[in-house]
Length: 77
Image (tube, rainbow, N blue to C red):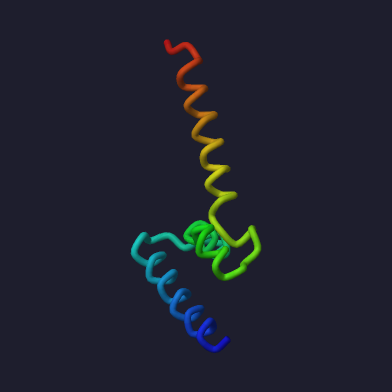
């Protein structure tokens, strides 16, 4: 468990560095962690489904599909 705690500290530092580099700080850091956690890694750690990026990936795909559909089907003037 101590190893996981040390990794948590390192990850928190890395996420802070990322936010500094992109000059944007996320209100909910859990969403950032989820977005950057691949489902296979979460599965290896036996984390619940909510702690990986799959749900966000599906949401992003749905948004892109809706925007693409609208762009391709609405008449342009």
